[in-house]
Length: 201
Ligand SMILES: N[C@@H](CCC(=O)N[C@@H](CS)C(=O)NCC(=O)O)C(=O)O
Image (tube, rainbow, N blue to C red; front, side, top):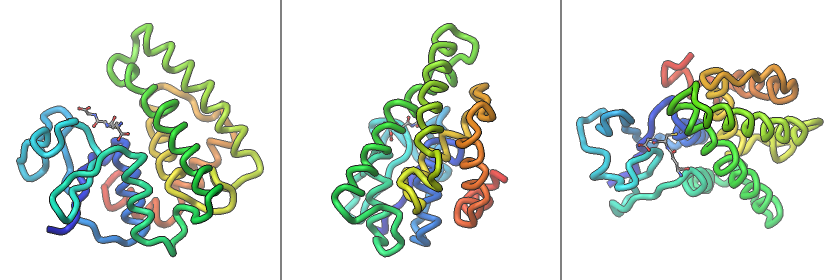
């Protein structure tokens, strides 16, 4: 059985799709409707992934790999020569530092906003996200990408979070460096090709 990626194009799982696409892995994909938890082939996704959420990769042996912070490095290591993850110890640790920050401090903070945009919890979440985006904005100052000179899987993950900002009423123009970085990534051929493949642009 070949590995297969389960994801939803506008979800956090889009980061894995972008990375798999950029690496030319040719990994088959099955999209999941997050309201019905049915896949595009009509399968019950909760029976495939008891966690219920995307992304997930079904491996050759039929077992399932979940969590963005596991999938993205796993995909990068399928083609180490592409350099989407550093090979040295400190570079790898810096990558984990960013993936941890994106997943716990940014990604999960969007939850209340997508649940109910106008709630008090959403206003608090928005303020938290903006504070954290301010940190990322400064961190990107003078750098092309999160890890410095090279695009990495952390950039793919952050990019997807940035695409959520307009839907969450977060104005990225308040963060000029981050806003320019988002535009640069959106125009990056591999990112653009993945978005086009998904009909998102
Ligand atoms: N901890 C998980 C969270 C994944 C997650 O939040 N997925 C969302 C989409 S961005 C989802 O599938 N939500 C639907 C659900 O939980 O039923 C990860 O980082 O992979």
